[in-house]
Length: 89
Image (cartoon, rainbow, N blue to C red; front, side, top):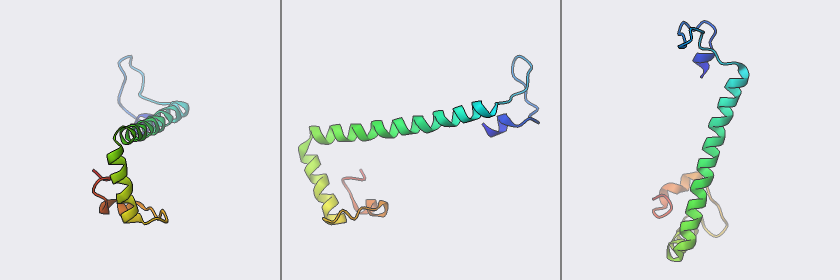
């Protein structure tokens, strides 16, 4: 996107005008990328919650594994994911 925004760009669009994005277009594209990744992550988390609710045995196994690795004081950190087999699968 940044290279398209360059005013010295020699490439041409089909209608003969230079490839150039306005600052507003660039901001809009960045917003779209951000919101798309946000929605994808949110949908993934909802799907996980649905599956855990549907399969209580897996929910219990996951909960036990988290307690074993992180303890009961909820000392969760991303570095502990490597120690978890069920959660990281």
